[in-house]
Image (tube, rainbow, N blue to C red; front, top):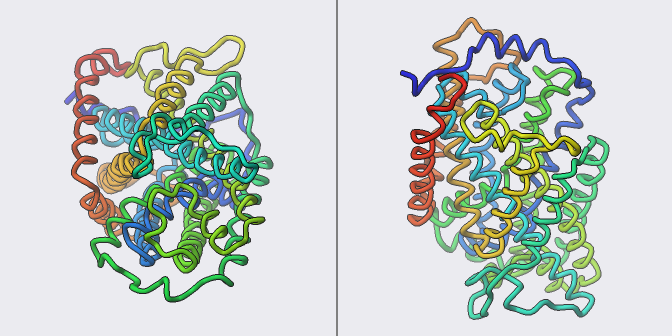
Length: 462
């Protein structure tokens, strides 16, 4: 039974109600912009091209399916986030409801999600950065422009820009960075403005003949693309990380989570529809800047450069948030004794977990440099889909074990909504490639080995 020992839930609730020091200044509008800021990045600027190769113009349907899977999971997420506005996110919730072993595996999962997400976004950043440089007549050597095998028929060794942006942002995080809601809101406005301008400029160049056939690979292609572009919506859980600073978490957190998802879903559908209407979907093969490519094909070169700059600014903040999230997961698990204390050791001058930050930056920077984007996206998705399934299970379990527990927001129609979340997530997982499952299985086995050889013995609950 020690495998399923839990943190004291009543203590967790009490700590959530007695937290002091952080000003409650965020409202629903701020939370929606935080969600959009975390979501709009590589998903819309890069994976739209990769998804189009899998589903054709029916990529729009794939985005709707992925958004529905996230929406059901988000309602479950909102119940925990609004009721327990404390640090640790899904890892802490699981530790208090499902037990230590499952919490460990979710934490291990989140390491995969946040770490590889930062790698994937940096690959997208690299593509748009190189596209921007090409506008000035500057080109990197091909061998340093992408990961091995990323561009069919072209010899590539190392994605140098992706590695360098990871190191640069790691350095910034290691010395301490304070991001305010105002700065985030400004960056979100820039990103959304770029997307809206693309829609306005691009729709005039749509050729409906490019939408035929609409679903060239049938339902299998649509669901396979949905499993891939699910990554585009990862980030809405960043809204819950601001729970301690929300004026009315019971009302505002669900609005922020669902609102940001809904807005991004509409933007993704519109962008993918226009992209595939301008450029035949087969032409996106090997392209890591599909939005600017569509504008170049439409002879809107002046705006293509503007899109590159907007994408670079947007993805920079996403990389920063993902590296930050990864280091804080390591910090929380280390503080509970499940990882070495060094991961939660704070630098006396900078006030940051310096060792954990640089370990994450260098390790996942190297992964970004040598692993193609489509492989990264699938690995991120399978870990996140598994984590979302478990949070849905946790809602059902807690409703049974602690029906008396005060809940600021209640997920509607339990157990139907959580079961729908589980169903959607597992269905999408089945459409991922066999190699992705094998890699995920190896990661989980490695996690179990670390838990039984180290974490279980050193846990503070032991």
